[in-house]
Length: 136
Image 1 (cartoon, one colour):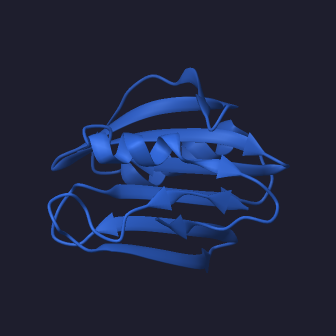
Image 2 (cartoon, helix red, strand yellow):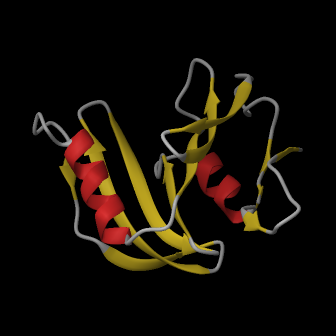
């Protein structure tokens, strides 16, 4: 399971919403600050499968119209776990995408890399069997 500390409101006063859902065989946690780009943080876990397959599916779903630009896949880490990282630039926003293996599942983390608050959230991310996202 996931532990992530996040505020109920951003420093600018925008409410922060957490949505947890099952969708298409994936467990998703989605944090967003209403009315701003201060927080955009999405964490998904998919059934086991190769990272390359998951990444190709994301590119197919988001790059069909050519508006989304993808950078190269590079090695990195998420919460201390090895990950494959790639930058995606959308016409109106920028997202950093991480794919990683976690206890037999494929994980995907997407967040706004230009937000210091998102980077702070990332520093609180941990994985443990008994934990769920928490509000601080």
